[in-house]
Image 1 (cartoon, rainbow, N blue to C red):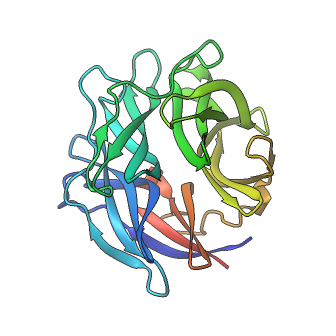
Image 2 (image 1 turned 120 degrees about the vertical axis):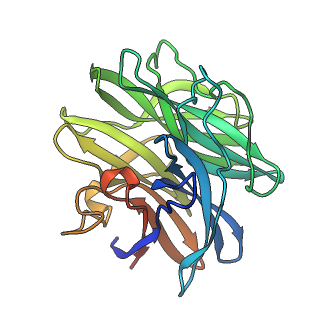
Length: 301
């Protein structure tokens, strides 16, 4: 596959308190014919991540229709797992509600950060969200003892909810974690069976991060786009395929997109979100500085 870059589509706006800098981890929800809500996390004047959205119209004239004036989800209460920031990860429409799976940020204690998944629910089509719980939905276990359990991608197939998520493996030092991508299941999208099943693992000893899985079932093939980096290289976008969503064939050479020679995505590309509209596949992604410039668009040729 080959993706054609179209440039930045959603950019920070200093006049919007939740989007003063960055627009990180695009997360797509279809809200109408050719119309999509793209959640992302911007940063406020305290450099905290908050979740808001931009509505976009897909098609020949792909562009932003409107941007939320307020965040739909703000940091949690002091002492909670998400008291320092929140970042979107995936949205599932279910029984007239929207389940927003998100990343809760907590700053350094003995290590640089804690990143754990939470759930918020909307009853108004995604305009506002309320936490399902003040506690996270993924939990530390003997198999997964580190507080990096995050970035969930969730698909509902019949009565089964399936999750691909980021799971901490070790801390090399207080500033350098290693994490790969694991798999979990649920009957309700809330309580998850974490069995430590690894889906995408490191391809070399110097690889440190496998992040933000984006899984789409395309007929009888599961396709995953994800981000990866090493101790010395910044994020790139990887790709994998699977017949069952559990055993994956990693095929990074088939991702079809890389950094540009210059400009806003010349140093890194990451956190891709792929979706299909009217037979056309689109990718939203971040570039340099973890979304410092905003969110870019690419179209599958």
